[in-house]
Amino acid sequence: MLKLGILGSGKGSNFQAILDAIDRGDLKATVAMVFSDVENSGILKIARDRGIPAEYVKPGSFRFRMSPESEKYMGEKLKSAGADIVVLAGFMRILKGDFLSFFSRRIINIHPSLLPKFCGLEAWKQALEAKESVTGCTVHFVDAGVDTGEILAQAEVPVLPDDTAESLHARIQEQEHRLLPEVIVKYFVAP
Ligand code: GRF
Image (cartoon, rainbow, N blue to C red; front, side, top):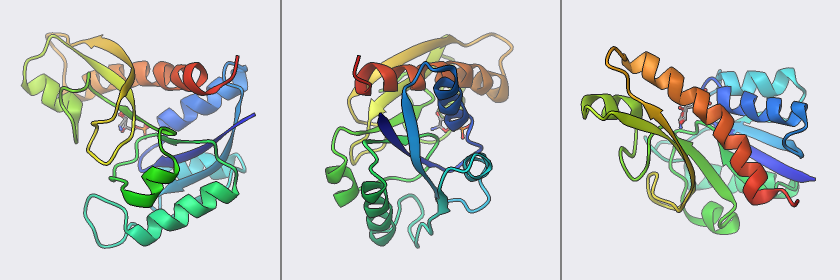
């Protein structure tokens, strides 16, 4: 059975969607470990409530990336926990170096825009400010850039005339919750 390593920084709704897909039997996988760079994040609570090993990892002194020591620590732990792939479910830091090469083409990320448009933070706000009529979300392989890896799948979300940043992000998240488990099944679960 496919073993997932999960990294996240936020409330963990995409992680919850993965657990729901597992519970429904749509995703034949188990979660080996969850790591977060945010000590009191929702994603760690969801994991712990379910008895899944979950750890806070100090990000180090960089603002937007994990320290090399923390990357090494997570990589080794995920290896020994037998993780086949790593899913970034709202993980807000850049990964580099050994972590990427060890899990080469086995790390995926969910991003709230139709990449290559609107990389980086608060991509739904960027779409709103650019007066796009359609935005969405993307699942892609992770490389050393910011939201630049090979695209695996996308879902479109219309931008409505009265959308606020919050309403648009909420509708994008509905699509994220459907798309992310689907991509894991399609690309990583043997038929
Ligand atoms: C999502 O919008 C995802 O696209 C972005 O971070 C957010 C995470 O949300 N990378 P959650 O923690 O899964 O609820």
